Length: 450
Picture 1 (spheres, helix red, strand yellow):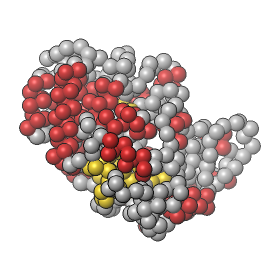
Picture 2 (cartoon, rainbow, N blue to C red; picture 1 turned 180 degrees about the vertical axis):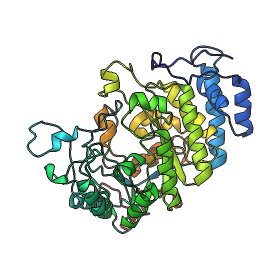
Picture 3 (cartoon, rainbow, N blue to C red; picture 1 turned 180 degrees about the horizontal axis):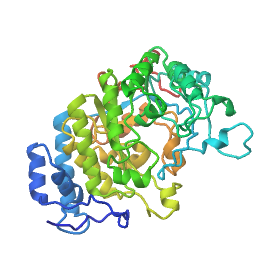
Picture 4 (cartoon, rainbow, N blue to C red; picture 1 turned 90 degrees about the vertical axis):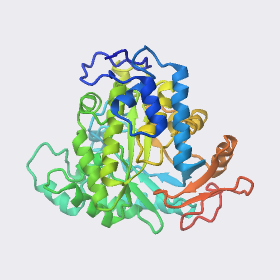
C-alpha cells in the first residue's frame, strides 16, 4: 500500500481523519480504466485525483493525461456545446445561527431581532419584495430564479408548521416567533409562491433548508417537498453537501445535517418528481479520499434516482471565513487541484451528463480552462451573487449573453442557451447578434441589460 499524499495548497494534517488517500491501485491502471470507460472505483479516483499516491505532489505530466481523458469523455457525452442559463439569484435572508466555519454569508440571527442595535450588512426580504425582484427580472428575459438562504429561526414551512412550532415547548428547534424580528421572513411556501411567476423556474430549498422546514414535526422529507412543489418549487439545489463524509462535516459544519440525512432529503425530492443538482465544496480541510467518497455517494444517489441534472464543483473561497481566521486553513485549493477535480468528476460520475465550471469561483480565464478539463456548462447570468462575494470572492456578479458568446467562441466551442433542466438547448450563432435569452416567457432575444 502506498501512502504519500499528493501535495496541496491546503494543510489537512492534524484533524485525525480515518479516511486518508491511500490505495493499492496504480495511477497507470486507473488511467487506463478511465480511458476505457470502465466504472471507476474509489481507489481509481484517488489515484487520478492525486496523480498517483506513489509520489509526493501533483505530477504535471500525469495531470495533463487525466485532463485529456476527461476532455475526450466530455466530447463523447455532450459534444462541443457550452451551455448557460438566463437566471437570477434571489437569496431571501442572511439570518442564520448554524455556525458553519466555511461561510461568511450568514449573519447571526439575533442581530435581526426587534431592539437589537448591532450593526450588520444582512437582509431579509418579504415575499412582496421577492416577487417584485423576480417580476422585474422576468420582464428582462430571465426564466430561472435560484434562492438559497440562511436558516432564519422565524421561518417555518407553512402556517401549519408555524402553529406547531409556536405550541412546542422544545428548546432545541432553532425557533423564535417571526414577531420577534424587525422583518417577518414569512414561510417557505409563501416565499416560493411569491417567486413562482408564470414561466419562471424556481430552483430552491436545499436539503438543509428542507430540514429546517420540518423541524419539530414527524413529517417526512416527501411531505415537505410535496408542499413546496404545490407552492411552485420546480427543482432542488444540491448545495449544503460540502463534503459528504461525516468526519469532515464534524469539523467544518457541525451544526448541519449529516451525510445520510442529506442523501435522504435529495432522494425524497426526486421521489416527488423534482429535478435536483449536486455540488461539492472542496479545498478546505478535506483530503483527496474524502473528495472521491463524496463523488461515489453522488453516483450512487444518481443510480437510484436519475434526477441529478448537473454537478457543480465549488472551490472553497477562504478569505473572510472562520476556517481561515482561526488558522485551520491557509488558503483554498490550488489551480492544479481545481482542474483535477473537474476532470475526475467527469470520469467518475458516469451517470451525470453535465459538469459545471463556475466563473464566480474560478474567474473567467480559469473558468474557460475548465471547459477543456471535462466541464461543459458555464453557469448563468446570475444578476446577483452575494454568497461568494461575502466570502471574499473577487469575480463578477453578472454575465451577459454577449460575453458568453464571445468567450465560448474564442475557445472553439459552441455557445448554447439552456433551460434549468437542460431539456431545452438552443445553439447561438456568433455571427447573428444581438445576443439575449429566448427560452423565457418575456425573452425575445433582447440583451438583458438593454
